[in-house]
Length: 76
Image (cartoon, rainbow, N blue to C red):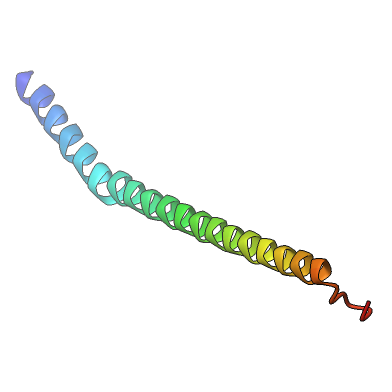
């Protein structure tokens, strides 16, 4: 009687370990890698947006300075 219970328990533990190490653990690592890649991509997009904003501010400031000196686009 105890032999069959012990055998079934041992078989369950071995099966659970195999499923964990072959399915669950690799999937968790894969999902972590995908999430890190997604965050890195979002971070790169934010940096690009910030640099674009800075460039647009510089263009605006240059145009305001030219307009203030009377060097507008129409030659006024």
